[in-house]
Length: 527
Image 1 (cartoon, one colour):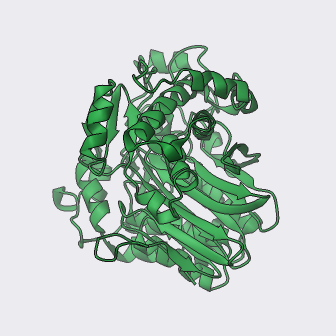
Image 2 (image 1 turned 60 degrees about the vertical axis):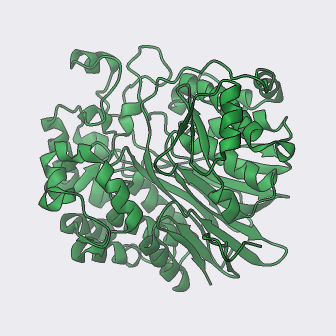
Image 3 (image 1 turned 120 degrees about the vertical axis):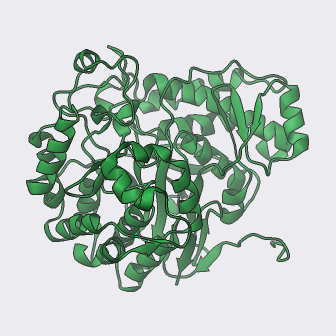
């Protein structure tokens, strides 16, 4: 039992339905839809749409989406709602345009055709119950009439200074020349108009007609290679694909297949499965996670890409002999040389979990990549465009090299756990590069250390990146000293690492147990 004299929060408990998000207005919107008889998909769309308005630096309708959907009693479906590069995009053309080793976040070439709305509308068509205008109603109200900026959103907003470089984005997101502070109201009336159009026309309201024409014209004016048919081909561009999985401590962990980095999370779990993390000290546990992450991310950066150019089937990398080989490279008394970290840093995302009264569950993630994405805002529509294409490589022959209609490697990954054939938990961790390592750490907390869902979310975080081991201030001085003694270069973080949500389904007790990260503003609520 939690010590009630100390700050903290317990898991949320409910019997019928639950939603967990990183923003209170998103949680409220999703709960309202669930109470009205909406499905998990309906609630996820409603909550995400609100967050696209009230947490604009983290997500938006100009971004991408992945989901794992588990219809009650059915097979888990993976949804790939990531956008594709223009048909005209090639390494040669981008190099001829003056780009050398990478695509800057604010370049029009960093903007792939946004895939989120295609994913939302496909899921809604196939698994929704309430009309789309009902689901987007609260988001439209907040966009048109304004909403109070919450503390963590205000904290992050103030740090994202790059938005000032685009005059159209600055006009919307820096009213009066500065970021809003907590409690101030902010509105995006043009975004409200676009949400109304989507509510009326579905995906066609985004990918065709005046909206698409405005987006294409704006991108072309910036030097982009986008054409109308790139957008029109994306109307039904989201794909249903088969999840990939591994078994960790007797439970099946499911992830979306590449081009997402879920494969890296499964590689980490396979590597860690050969160690007794329950019997480790804090320093030993952090060391094992750091070394497993280096190995998994090395393979991620070298291999994960659009499925059409994937060098190896995921099943090949998830084989036990691969796990054994990776495991053998970890020693407890020293650090490995850092793996090659040469991908752009991936930061900003929102994640949510929902379970409805019929037992359907969804793990849902939506992102514009960097804070405020590309910072490119189309002034007629008010749509902020993401920067996901900046993770493409400009190396001929690299699996993740940019190419016509290719999808880039993605960091955003929803997760799902199944036990004895039943789904027991949709879960996810925000935080860009950290997400795969965060999945492994969260699951290890629950299944190695016996933490409940909220405790596993709240546990101190660490992440080995670029030869530096970042740790949150809640990691003990004793552990830090032990880590430095064996060669880790430790850096104490000054801002929280990521965020997480999860809902554990206790089938035996007929109970939903929800957790929402105290590092964010949100909550888990149910009935």
